[in-house]
Length: 359
Image (tube, rainbow, N blue to C red):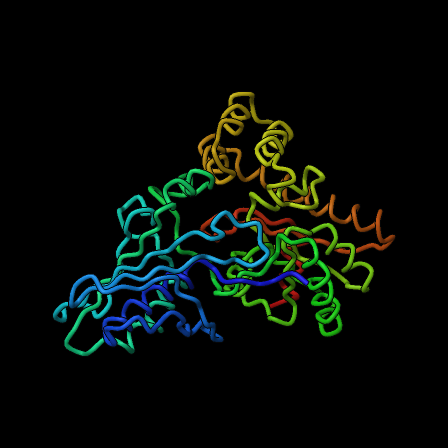
């Protein structure tokens, strides 16, 4: 069975909590700390903790994402905590070396990570003091070069992001069986399913008011999960995902892991031709760094709406044919595509019908 781990924000918070507690005890006694994961708890090992000055301490943890194919495995996370007289805020979070910054210069610490820091540190801070926490990732700047962070406006390092503290091994093949079992349980209560691709798919589903009873997570195995839906007699599947992942289905790629295949720009480029776009628009798409950048450029050309309508229709058509081929079942499929911000950019007519049924 694949082993789960924890996401990067958990280890950052654990290091900060260990350093803060060390300031209070002034002894090396906090080499394991309990973290509130919102929800749930986790006990995290702390590699080292030391007092630097009477009001300053540093602690180090090592990232452990479980059996995920995660480039942050065993990455050291440092938290430097300083106490001072109360300022306007009780807790100040700063980006040290290797932690990314947004284009506006803010620390790349996103909503869930900030809530983790608040839940675990605010109760420990005396009313007359402020804790300033600098998160340092010594290997972060180098590791960030192997990600698409810069294309999404995160520079100089890695980000503390995610919507959960648990790192599910969605990239480990044996986790597919767990996902299939979850689908089999869901379809007993709801024959109209919503496939959420990634944590951002979950966020969009929740914003659209889709009931939890209908939501199925797929990891990268969209094809296998579509076939499972057909075999378990689901009535329909609404595909809800980031366009840069989901449009791979329009090219016949049904495992959307970037480790296996990544032809999203070529697929968008083919759709530009199908929509009547010119070669300049195609070249612009192929030169784009991300699918979102390609969408933005096509908006400037005035063809984005028609291109992504073609892609949404093709995804649903290909998915239906895939299930028919491998399960010999006619499954209704609709597609909703959204960008990195969670804004819906296209949906086919089948998706609109299926969304009405979920409302």
